[in-house]
Image (tube, rainbow, N blue to C red; front, side, top):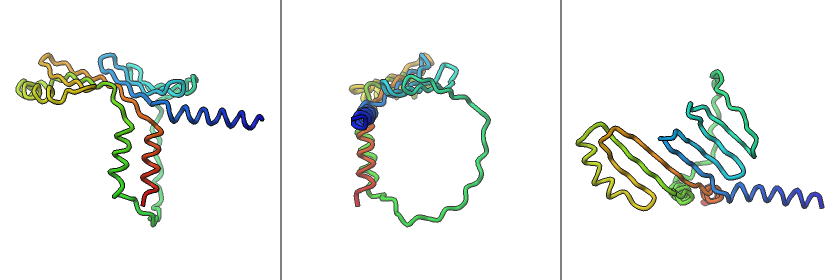
Length: 165
């Protein structure tokens, strides 16, 4: 009975991790950079670009330490398994389909009046659905993005990539 309960809890947690989307949230005006999965993990950068990590509600300290020199690795023997390059487009398509962009807003000034004027019709043409692109002449650069990644679909894409012949 105890084994069944433990197995049920492990399967529930695994299902939660796989089927809850991983959210990437970026806002340059507020200097807000976050990657999180509700109830599981949260990684963010403070305004001073200090990384923070919280897993299952427990804060994990992340400090910038001294750089550690790595020893040069020994030359490994080449494995005989070949990388299936012909399936690479399928993998990239599977990863692309697992990403849902909720919104992407970009307000850009290149400090070149002519280039900004040329970007306005292009940005108007490209601004569709969740993507809003604008050019300004006031020196402002702003980006905001919210994207959701479905981990089970990424895992499925990798599984198909490595099992297809």
